[in-house]
Image (tube, rainbow, N blue to C red; front, side, top):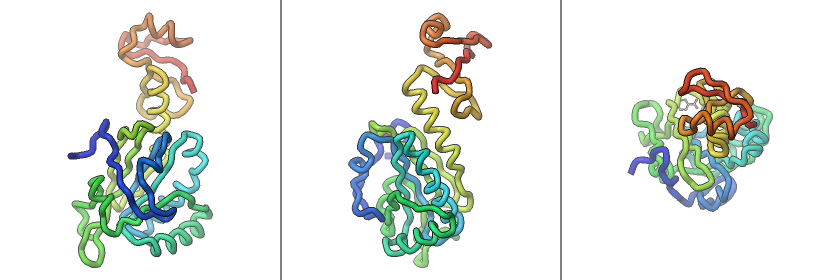
Amino acid sequence: MPIRLGSLAPDFTAHSTKGDIKFHEYLGDNWGILFSHPADFTPVCTTELGLVAALHDEFEARKVKVIGLSANGLSEHDQWIKDINEINNVKLDFPIIADGDRNVSTLYDMLDNQDPTNVDNDGIPYTVRSVFVIDPTKTVRLIMTYPASTGRNFDEILRVVDSLQLGDQHRITTPGNWKRGDDVIVHPDLSTAEAQRVFKDVRVIKPYLRLTSSPF
Ligand code: BEZ
């Protein structure tokens, strides 16, 4: 079964740099971000993991538990984390799954299908750069897939988490390029009369486009 927005995030058990992890149990009632890296000791991955480590407080503020994955073993992960910390001046403290057997990569359909260079010495594909944002009910809310050669924008991932969390709390949607604090859109399900009861200010641009101040 393909994983789609709205799917139950498949549960799994895996070895990680923080010990063995049961995925659902690890997430508890937090939000989760599962993100894959093709392989250890690769340059783009080294910068990405430094960025995520540096954003620790931002993820914590949103009750998001992050968990990385790379298709190598634990001893390589441990060595690599020392490099990541040194190069990026961080202290990486989230788990990275050791997915040398590609169990989790296969379960989440993360293996590279297009880059013939993104393979191990035996020719077995590494992963692409996948991101799954999972809400506290373990529902998949965002899926991103980037090629191995392109590092991701983690500010964008935080921005989507903000939009999802705000939309779950208030009957709003967020416009293109929206960021925390900007005006939001009254959900199309809400009549303008209802919106005026719920929100302090409602600006009607068109009957189908009503703006209100950010509830943040
Ligand atoms: C990198 O992290 O730099 C990378 C990994 C696999 C393929 C291409 C780039």
